Length: 562
Image (cartoon, rainbow, N blue to C red):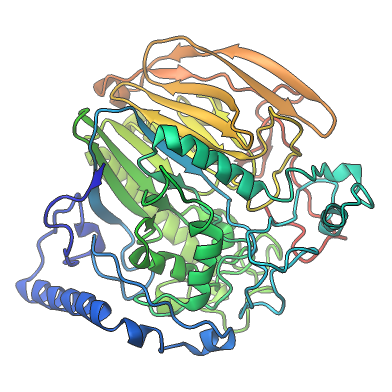
């Protein structure tokens, strides 16, 4: 049972965003406190009494798409809506209390938000339709897989499947599986629903890339207290209608932004509307680009601090350095591009530095918060995968007690065992949510191309269970505890499958983990192949069963996207 501590239902924001440290406001001047309390109260009252007005106040951009503003009730937990999307950066959201003595579960998923073919974008010239059959309401998978198959080649595979003429013109190099690749988001969601009936997850960790191609295709800058009709429709079709049912209904989704949520190769799409949706949903939780969630399990004496970080500086190069995989691209951002009105990058030329400064700001904040944390478990959730900022995460583990890194971006399900660049830290990648094709072809019921994680939490142990789109458990890995276990994992290429059985062993605990009574297990999750386990692409670790992506000169306008 999830509850909110007494007094949190109508709390107004006072002081700086970070003042919501476990629900305790910091000291500010009495005049400023009074002003903010009045503003917060008026905002909540206005939103409760004027829903009809919200439905009539369309922005110019919204009028172009003929989508009215949504008439939704603002959530009462936490502070009132911010004035801009970055105002609550560093916020500690009011603590979550999970009652009960049953086994506690958390789900983790990423890169899940497919295309909606009926949306008429404002920030691009065409609808989000890549292939025949994709013109209907979503979700439809983004037909891109890195490697030797261009996007036009992959579209031929979808077309042949739609016409029931597969393989038709589909090239074997595309690794296309007509029973899987046409609807992976739906297939993964169905397994989440099935598992939720028994696991009853208390919340979901969402690592981003919530909407493909490029987030919500409206310009940034809509009022934060309002939700545009386009954003509401996309959330309904791609999120609410997909992840529902017993065990999932009403469960919080702790969420971060991925590079596609900003726009993929531009930064000006409506990422701020994903933050605004926090106040229009009973489960979506993304009050800022980065924030902290404290969770107590009082009946079992367990506590957890979750740090939700924005790592999109990884794709924020200088404007002319990279045309394709670059949020700050001069080529793809519109003339005069700016999200300054909502607290975002003020211009293309200042975009890269803005993201770099945001990352440095988060690093300082995380170190300060983690050093003060007394929780049993410390977890970081971010979009970019195991390997980025590895030395920093290693330091957080060794010196401040970081227990688990939860990531996505690489479109596969993978666990990286302690060792190498991350030291003793365990990191998982859950980028196989199915909004975009997996980085490796799905091959059979053992595939780790698509899926999610079911994480079990006790006072002594976190157990990570990888579940694929067929509902099969691919392996279990433990953090903490002193038990040696055996897991089986698989690897895949387009044509071969190899199975390896490995055994976990125990690594020494870090000083922080020893203080909490945890030991660190080494989780052998190697997917067998002939190349070195330390292969890297840029500064991101390449999973063992994946080929580093290449940009296809002959591909479509988005052939590079991951």
